[in-house]
Structure formats: C-alpha cells, structure tokens
Length: 119
Length: 111
Image (cartoon, rainbow over the protein chains, first blue to last red):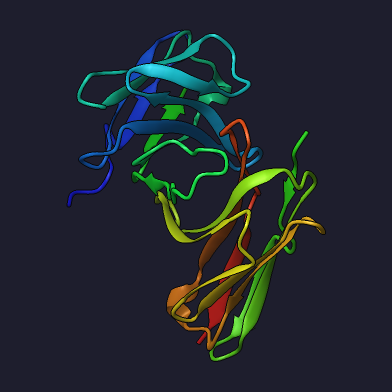
C-alpha cells in the first residue's frame, strides 16, 4: 500500500506570493491533517479534514486555508507569504478520526513533507 | 491549555545501552499519546500509540508507558543501535481531537 505523498517536496517563493501544497493520503484513509514544523515552534497543528469538511483548526491566521476533495486528497494554501512561513509542512492521514471512548486506533501516518522557503 | 514537554532536548549514549526518553503533559484529559521518530528533513514515523485506558505498549526493542495521573509517558529503548539516532517526538491527542506535539528529544547513539 502506497504511503502518504506530498507535492512538491521543495518550494521557494518570495514574500507576498501565494502557494498551494498537495497531500494524497493512504488509500482508504479519509482524514487528513496538516502541520507546520519550524525549529523554534516545533510541530504545530494547522487543520484537519474529514470527508471534505474541516473538523478542526489550529491557531493560525486566515492566510492559511485548506480543502479536501472527494477522493480524500487535500490541499493547503498560504496567501500573502511572510518570511516566517518558511517551514516544513507535513500532512498525515488516518483511517478514522478519533472517537471518544471508542476502541479505534487512529495512528497517524505522515508524508515526507514539503519544505517551503520564503525569500 | 495543554502543554507537552520533552526533556532532555538532546541525548548522546553509547551503542548497546538501554535508555529512557521522557514526555510530560499538563492536562490528563487526553484521548491517546503517540511516540514518533523523525529523521533529519523527513516526515514522522509512528512508533507506538497508547490509548488513554492503557498503561503501556511494546514493539520490538521499544516500550512506551503512560501514567495519566502524573501526566507522564516514557519511551524505553533497549540495546540501542546507531540506527536509532533520530529525533523522538511525543504527541497527545485531546478530547476535541486536536493533537499537541512536544519539541522532541534529539538522540545520538555513539558507535
């Protein structure tokens, strides 16, 4: 079974531009989460999509947005890029979202990430 | 507000030694806790996931424990090998399904 794929792997943009990153989850997985990883802040949760709906959102400005398609592939978009947006962007897929009190194991499977550099 | 702390930030041990990595969290109302490893410039690989009702999980040379009441988890690595060198992160999943990561422990196994 193929793993989580992310495209592109590397991206260089300039301030003020916008960028779109893509994530294809493991076949059969319907939940996709996005994270930003920087040396200073570590891994921070951006948002989670399940069945084309945003289920959860972290504390990021509205410049960060995402969507999920019917085939579970997800995209995230960052508009008006700032230098501080330079980071490794990771997506993760799970087969089912967590259910309080349920017995599901919702292990997250991560993609290799997209390294975004903003100049 | 849930905070996840991993101490130490970096650790070097000789090959063959057993070692323990620590993770602490401030709010015991978690759904599960997961340990990951991350190799430089790469994504994360899940190692072990412990549900809130469980006390420990084992996989090969790895054993993770969870003590919700004290807000602590440990990852025990037996007979360390150079290939174990990586950054190890713990993450707690909250009841609202948000996931909070620690900043990780950078582990270096000396040959």
